[in-house]
Image 1 (cartoon, rainbow, N blue to C red):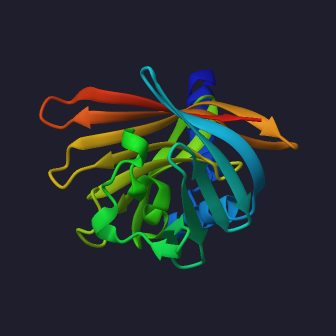
Image 2: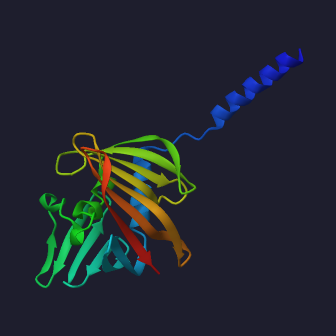
Image 3: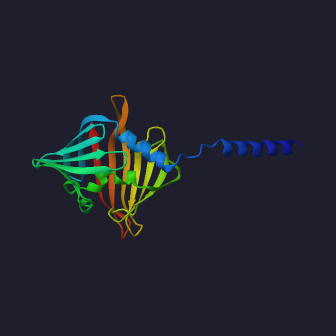
Length: 225
């Protein structure tokens, strides 16, 4: 009798635990929260791209939906405009502002592992997205999403994102080429608080040789207070 009661209680507990599990929000809502978080920041910080012995300093400034990366030696400025429906990456020159077209998206920023497409964040607007489940990155509970490119203008056929549930921060990204091979991985290594808000401190960017699956280059994006 006691065994039967124990079995019933165990079964009931299991059923209740499944019933109380929080279903993931739609992928569209998660991506909207990421875009909103990205577009709400006010920043003026120093950073660098570091690849081996090569160090590329830059200044990062942001006023709401306008993000600018300023480099020197030679002078160069790239700015990203975030809107509700799309993003626009531009090059700022003495002659004015020129939109960077998709044909230039595979160009590397200062010969590092970061491309123009990586800065453009176009994948945050891809309509074909689904939630794959949840995961943990750097002790952060995350939603894991898969996004499929709407056309071949992207160097990635699909992108997988890990988004922190509580803050909407991007914790990890994997980009796959059009053969389905892993081409690039971005991983947040550490974060920091700036004016009471969590912000990136260091991100590791790995380029893969798609024929062997081995890391070809490793770049670090680092932000200083």
